[in-house]
Figure 1 (cartoon, rainbow, N blue to C red):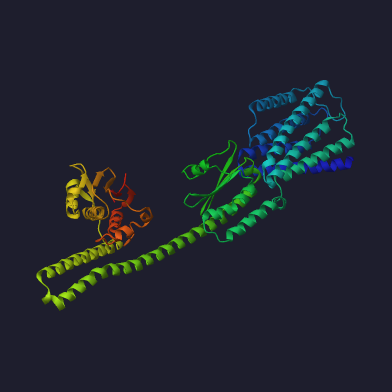
Figure 2 (figure 1 turned 180 degrees about the horizontal axis):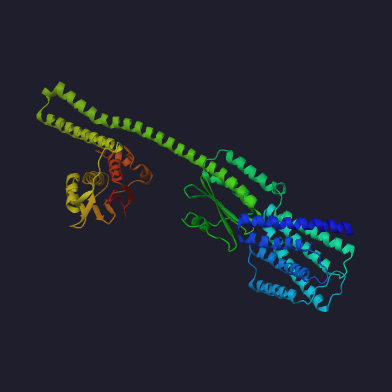
Length: 580
């Protein structure tokens, strides 16, 4: 037994020294509070093991001070381990203050002892009391630390959970080893062996929990990794939307790091998918601010990748005990970004294709409808001209006058249609120059109404006498004349024209008291050559007026839109910026 105990003791010295070195290297790499306290705790254990190599000879004051230092380090270790657990979740203030006082008292007591008996020597009463308080202090802090570590692992993914619980076992085993070593004044070979076995168990569990080998971590996270691999395979499959892509990886990604909530934003900052997130928090994610801390102790990790951002709300233990899992999550995020970008390109190509198909359809419809609209006046003109050519001498004055009126009416209609087609052609080619300038608004609107309205007296112009507007004169003429003409042709008087100029916009409305636009026709109201069933029965229309009016409005940097008037009728709103 003595040989086995000595062998384990030698192993433990090497193992604890290695544990201290690993903790120190981790602190140098991370430089955070948790790594600092871990390096301090395991560095103390390594120092205790190395100091135990110094012989304890009688009447050697230097070696006696080494022993006192060794005891002091043992006194401080459980408190430092407790502070390591408190780096993730702060303990209650009363408990923390009580432990600080108890540790300080024991530290002072260590140097207040008259002497420290060696193995086999009699223990004075004061030393026995010190050992009892020391054991209580050690057990209390070790139990608190072990319970905190064990409970912390309950809601963690496999790797973090096993690391935390191994460290809890290590703290418990070390406390048992110390109690066993201090429980008897004359340690037998069996007690010494048992203490060294517990100490070995402690250092092994500490080492594996604190810095598990890569192979061990891979075995532990096999289940989560399989889910992630399945999600990655799903990313390769076709998806029609970014929301569909993101939803495929949310739960597997959350499982690998034990996330409480997760969100994916695309390159534009729009949230495309969330998991376990309230709608209000989702809206806050799209604001130009850091992600909100949903829970008081939540650790918010913002992982950027090409094509988007992965926002993870997880426990405070995840960054320390799940660093490799977070790196794996970074890889998943990068693959998700590629999939999001692929969907974006597909959607852009699809949108462009639909737009081209729509443009081609509009072009063909435009040609067909233009030919159809021109054919009617041309056929009429051709028929009457033919009549005049062959039978002109047989017509009396009244008949010739009627033929002339029809020819004038149809040529006027054809000229107006050609002019409208030319307007549309120039607007499509962006060949019309928009040059806003200051105009006296009311006199100008009166001129437009006088020229466009069959009955100018039926039009009320609700505009201030001295109102000045900054708009393009030609564009305003074309828009208002079309709106007023339509109001008379398809609506009913009274017709009201209102306009106002603000610091940034010019706004104008034309409202009539007719029957309004049928709801089913509103989506096609501004399409070229589109005419409702009612308007087809109204002579004189071409189906181009509103299309031209809106095109002029948009060429001006504004827009034209429709709404029903109250209690009935049609109301058109024109909004133009004062500066383009």
